Length: 613
Ligand code: G6P
Image 1 (cartoon, helix red, strand yellow):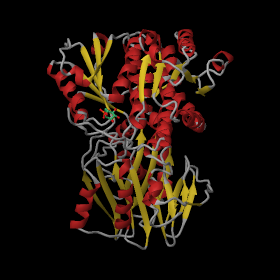
Image 2 (spheres, protein in one colour):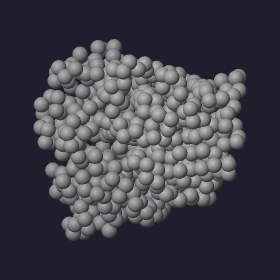
Image 3 (tube, helix red, strand yellow):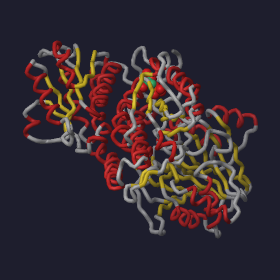
Image 4 (cartoon, helix red, strand yellow):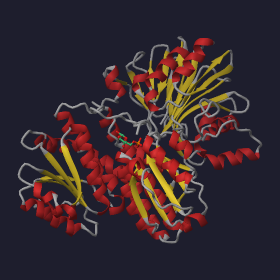
């Protein structure tokens, strides 16, 4: 996730682009850059770190032009550095590109270009686009971009300018957002509405496959084959604050709704269900080592710890590797038995959590190999771990983690499948089946989210005073950690005490708490070996007067008889089901918190990144 802004018109492009990027900093902030054309020559300014660094550079040496593109980066390929900051250009410095997305086949394209002895200046997947456009350029930028796009696999929102056609911006969209702001004698492009609101409320929302040629006076939208595409202009009525949240009331809600895309971004370029193949470019573990792993410790805090608990089921079932999961603050002070065959996986959204970092250092000091599952490129954990698999979720602003959690689940699912194959524990047929299940998840979540209001209606009942004393969350097997996560979300957001429990363990204690005032959220998955066991546990709770809220993927009579409060979710395989079952629980916590008037995005006493012990 990165932010793009472009401008062509009579005003100073640098000013407009910089202010626009400021509004998009929530999309990434590890480096930034701007490219303009002055007298048919490209000028590029880039700087590592937050946008203010670029601002200081521009203040020192002011530049101005009537056309330009800019970018604020959230690194995916290549660490945050000036060389990797966008815009990227071709070797002759005539084409310049800003990009949000992931080019899956960039290595292949790079290798092809390298044969023609092309020099690359960065480690990014984006630079190859500038080289390709230049290669195809024959006095027609639009056509060169169209030819380039035919070669790209992956997702992109692109802004491209060329010194030989200094009056136009070409932009294109595939699975990454891009809008055109329509002005008078000036036009704009941006990743998101807030960047353009000070200048225009008339916007065109590009769709997949659209390529636009934009001058100060004209906007022409075509497809790759040069057919005209007609897109209407929408008038945006949001105020600036609404726009930052994409029209959602809170960042958390926005982030919940982003999950179909963020999950896809995390598996994109890493899984190929049709071929039955997993490819995790950044993990450098030899097959021999993977075969020899004796055990795994997964370590994290809070929600990341819950992702670790889910991963245990995956590593043990798919790869047959004994796995222990630990809370980082505990792990660092006990004496875990570690050796060179022990693999340590630390999970952290921020990559800065002090306890998780300390656990990582402990593991390294004992000579273990380490992998971080992390969202923030360049963070301490990502720098210190030997290998990193990034969750490509973009910045998470709501303190309660949502999209980062499902990104973490996606990452560990992929790792477990990969190792299952490499260790000969999964057949290719099984791999294809599980990959397909993952592939279908974003669509299923999108379907479910259309009915988010049903969850809100349930929250309305249970946010009432007579109910809100305590909640119990029950799950079994791989959905037991999801019960823990659901309870954590409710606690942190609405300050209602909630406890997650393994449903089979309920009779050893929590059952004593159950009476009519206690809501019990129970997760039931049909395609599960514990389905009937779970049903029995629900009966036990019901028999004690508990009010059941069911989350179930099966719309059948048996389930319907168990409770009047049912949240139906699309059916999935059990192993991938946590990605689905957690969504209604996130929503339930969110709506309850809103109804109780709590501060959803910044709950009291909590912090997004806990850098102290
Ligand atoms: C804090 C946050 C949680 C997060 C946990 C671990 O408690 O409020 O949302 O799960 O830290 O953070 P990390 O960045 O390491 O995933």
